[in-house]
Length: 622
Ligand SMILES: *Cc1c(COP(=O)(O)O)cnc(C)c1O
Image (cartoon, rainbow, N blue to C red; front, top):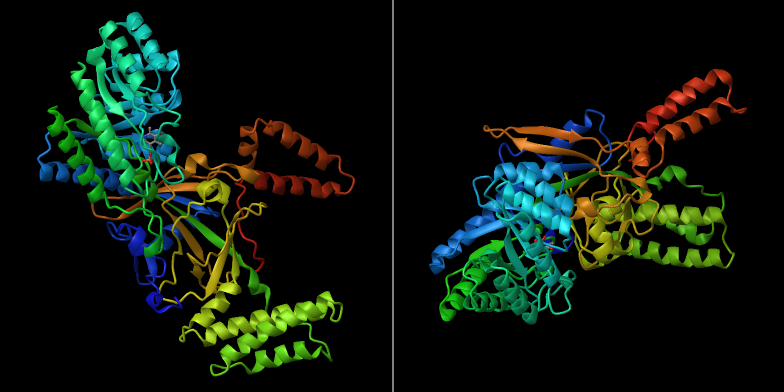
């Protein structure tokens, strides 16, 4: 904004960097770059017309489907380029997003591809069985007990193309036991290898020797012996690794592929003649950054697919083995972009500073009087100078207060006048960007109270410092003038996205009592929904799916309203009927409420209890 590279308001929020052309800025609003290109603001307003206030979680199934197709088409392209004869298949790892509003449309939209689901728990395995078409791949990772392995055998009996990836020798022993009990068909067996290569980044714990998962070289040999002994070698069909999520560099993956490629070739030499696939796990990164220089990954999908195909071809050629089927389990890459959280701004904290609230005295301390004069006479010519003076005066006045020389009224007048001067100066200097003004702006931030819970909707911001693209949904042909800190509505001081000078967020100076202002948090479709926690009892926000018909018109479907207050309490094992009874009793027995008011009060309370816990409005004027 203020710096010259950012004077184009449509580019301030870096939409060209992170949106992969799924969203565009046109006519001052964010639009969905699909079909009739509706704007997010019109979709939001349409949904809110039905009385659904609070934050909205919007799903765009076409984006997730597009991401899967991008993955397939890039692998197919790389295969053609390098003359690779192995196949490409993929699964979606359920742990990234198990919500029906995401999974069901994804499976429907990709049923022409060799695309299935990956499960890491019994619950996820049941989902994988229900929603993967027969013949499409299912993979099962993570720790398994005998029961989970039995479910895998049942899936194989049902005709599913299922691979149980073992994480340790004990799991192979359980599979052997079940094979004896069930007989054929026996699920395919995968071996998770413990890489010597470590991952990088904040999610790196999945790879490397100290990883929670996978077989060492010695254990791989032991597994081969066990398989041979029980005549199950023909079931070994895949080796697998996963080096961690959101790989920001490509080099650890390249190392891991060399390692896995050589293990694949060695195991085939040892007699694993049906070993046909290398499953490279997930980790394909998503661009979350709104600043070019802070990019979240140092590679493109093109480079990623080229590297995987090229390296596996090179190793296969060198070792004289058939080129393996390439298998991926990319989750974040598929899911992140499909969802946007839209949250209304409830309040700008400096908005309370208006001339009306000044309590100037007949005789004010000289510095306060001077502030008032600055405020009255500020103009384009002197704005910078006056701004500096105002900030200096404020420092002095606050010191005077600490020393007991001015009173609370003087201090309040100081605060108000300084805010008024800053606002006026910013307005006057809007067209004269300078580093100095930016510095002032960055010191005097505006706090925006936003109707959402960071813990529920952006838990990785809180837990891992992961940032998400955020921008207003409209006014994108106006320069934003305020450095923004965002406050959520939980009463936790961690519920804040503080202004960060390295990745500054500038927002508009709006009067939310007069006009609505919505922020979009983008790329929240991976991990956030399921990791989201009900801190302060804020639950999953109201969700809606935006689909497009053949003509490109948009349809708002599957609206699921956020849980109401009593349902949330029920989920916490409270007895909501008992709560209702206790409250009714207190009202009925109350000596302070008049009898003829009791029914009305009870009725009003019931209405509140049947609504969700997000805030509706906090402005009395609306
Ligand atoms: C979590 C996980 C994935 C998904 O990783 P993304 O980074 O989301 O692509 C894939 N495979 C395994 C085994 C996982 O644990």
